[in-house]
Amino acid sequence: MIVVTGRALIKIEKLAEAVTAAAEMSQLSQQEPGCISYRLYSNPQEPIEFFLFEEWESQADLDRHFESEHFRRFSAMLPDLVDDAMVMRRYEVKDVTDV
Image (cartoon, rainbow, N blue to C red; front, side):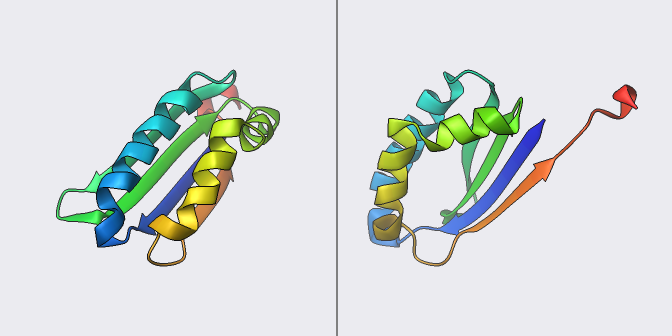
């Protein structure tokens, strides 16, 4: 399984637009083959701080996600929405019971 995490600070004046875009991205991504979970959250104490948590069955599924129209559209919007560099991490994980 592939897990992707991310963190971004959103421009305060773009917050409503970012929430709408994030909701659409999450909804469409969860419909993709191989997507186990795709969630975007905001920090309740700091609403401009967004966190991303994705789970994919395989790297091939994640690669297909990167080619999707909604991913490209969302990625094109990010420079206008994000106030700082995004921090993204990718992990390949294995269920400990599969050892």
